[in-house]
Structure formats: C-alpha cells, structure tokens
Length: 162
Image 1 (cartoon, rainbow, N blue to C red):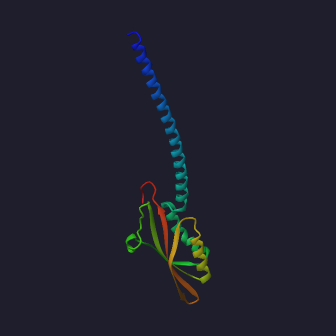
Image 2: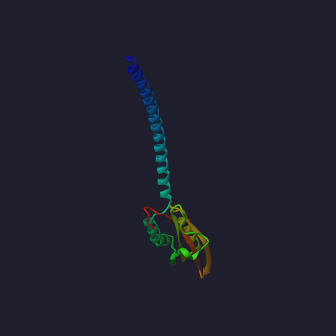
C-alpha cells in the first residue's frame, strides 16, 4: 500500500511525458505544414498579381476606349464610329467567364490611308493588357481606306463590381 500510490504517480507521469512528446511532434509538423502553405499562398498571390496586370480593370477599360481617339489621331486616322456591343448580341461567346473575367466588345470604324490603319491596328494590338482585334474588314473610299473591326477587351472583376 505504501508503494502503490508512487507507482501510479510514476505511470501517470510516463503517460503524460509520452503524450507531451506526441503533442510537441504534432505541433512541429503543423508548423512546417503551415510554413509550406504560407509559402504556397505567397506564390499564388504573386501569380494573381501578375495576371491582374495583364487584364483590364474597370478604370483602365474606360481609359482604353477614350485613348482610342488619341491612338487614331497619332496615326493619321479618323474614327467614324465607335459602338459598344451589348453582351447579348453574340450568343456564341459568353461575356462573363466563371473566373471573374468579362469580355467587353466594341465595333470600331476608321478611315484613313492603308499604312496608317495598319500602324494603328499594330499599336492597339501591342497594348499592355489582354485584348483581341477581330473581324477586320477593309473597303476603298476614293483615295482612302475605310476599315471596320471588333475590339474585345478582357476585364477582371475586382471586389464584386462589374
């Protein structure tokens, strides 16, 4: 009876020490996993930042369409028409992708010399953000060329705003 309480206390201390070691091991493993996840999250954040720079946001999209006139005049071309196409005009291409990127399309018509129009299209195509120029049609008007095209820009939605 004298030894039994001491044996129970020693046995409890051994079990406690084993559990403490197990908890410490799990804690270290969780810290390593947390650091790996943190590093991965930082890499993904950097990738998202790079992608966001490639797409238009609402402000840069508005600025781009206002800059089209400047680009045209720099190249000696006159804009005859600039019309924003509605989302429902073309059912074959969705305007909003599930990733939060929407497509805004505009029909642009210009008139000028052929070389000037080509230079303008090159300058638009080399824009820093993601855009496409499609459906380019040319027709001769006296000594000048009339060109119509569709410009599609890709806008990333930020903060739930469209």
